[in-house]
Image (tube, rainbow, N blue to C red):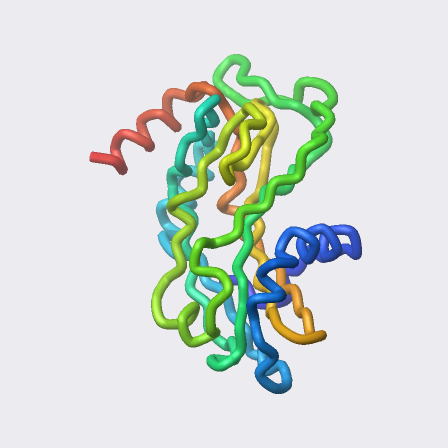
Length: 209
């Protein structure tokens, strides 16, 4: 579980995210003072994510885009039920190098590729009332990961780089804009075009059966 304490905020990140959701901000209405002091975000299917983390999770990326497995799902409480929010997802590099799989383990392998792209996924239910977001777990099942910049709402990642998904909750409407960021260490993964570790492959097929 992560509360607002797991924030990774910078002026640049906030500015970029707010620019991405400018249309979302225009679609919402301000509904009183913020009441997110008790905001809590819980990772669903945590045991599944933990199992993949134990073998170093690998997430497949393809030219045409591939859905995530495990699927990122969260539960949110503490939002203002009558205020409007948009939920976003992006993927942040966790370190400053490439990785390679050698002799049964992942090891650092030089400098990372320069990332010139900045893809943010806007949950299709956005914008919506806090009551909507809190009524059931929120799934990012439609996110597709690709290694080619081809548009269509897909997230482009560099293969053999490690990433951590970050969820952003943006309160929209009027002049008030509040960005809350949350991530979970167990959801980190290395982007690959094919599974490198046989244990990761076995985890995938065992959970899909």
